[in-house]
Length: 125
Image (tube, rainbow, N blue to C red; front, side):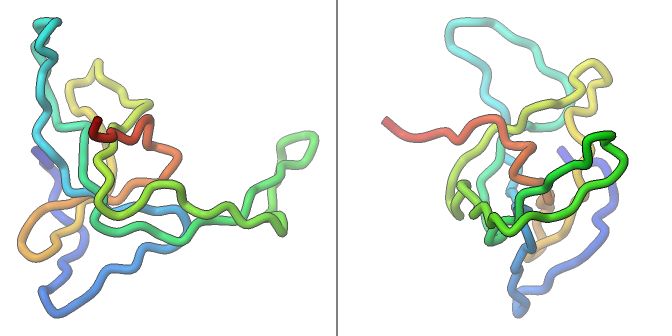
């Protein structure tokens, strides 16, 4: 599952409050398609959101892309607590799956991701 040593330990009496558009995910096991036979190596790329930040201010870049700054437009986080999400933009060729910082929450390993790393939100029919 998660191979790296956790950077932080959150005790049972503590609460998590991510900042900006960060999400705390509980990794879920990867389930293969019933139609396509797939062999997958590496870590899961699916997770359940247990905490979500409020959002972030939109960035604007200079024309020469040398610097950027925040605008006055606040963009709230679309992903909500309890959503099951699939992460995108991963390097699947190295077999690692992802390189997000892990954290221990109530004795279980979780990962911290940005909302921009989420490819889709899975919804029940």
